[in-house]
Image (cartoon, rainbow, N blue to C red):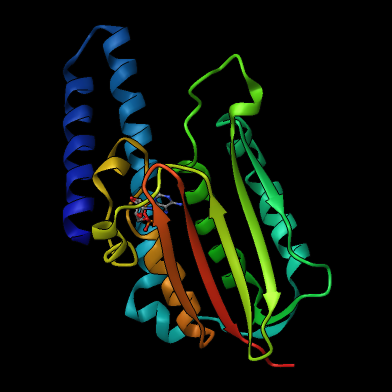
Length: 223
Ligand code: ADP
């Protein structure tokens, strides 16, 4: 799978580079260079996600759990993703109570929220009626202390995931058909699953097509 994804991109880049080298038309050359630039930055994204998932990285992964104030962490990720959310007219609602703490690795947990929240935005509600601002989508991040665990929910009112796709979304490279017109590598949720495993937790998904999706994490509570 990995080699297919990377090979396809290298083929495109190489063909565009050859065309550009043989061409004299400035406009066509510029278009080819733009394709080379976007394909190589996607490839670079895929490679860094692959490195994160590769066995070598898993062995060497820097894992330093510490006490984290969950609301603050979610705020900083939401800030990072604000432009992306604004561009799709989607509002992020950080509803995590102030007093929830988790014992987690700061950088891995940040990566996990970036992946879940950016998916919720990317596969969020499509603007049907541009005249009505209120019609945009929403993403809610919620958490509660269940005693044994801290339960975290990332919920959206977007396109949803079919029952068949729900069985596979945490697999490496799996992408639902509907996702194919949106950029991505199919590695984001595999990384989420890996990070949750590292923390001894679980992740699951519930969804209704056309209504939205709900990702639930359960992290062991080390109070
Ligand atoms: P991708 O790079 O394709 O986003 P992910 O591993 O993050 O890869 O997600 C796998 C697939 O799961 C996506 O291609 C998409 O079909 C589906 N998916 C993930 N999150 C959502 C969501 N919040 N709403 C609807 N579909 C989702």
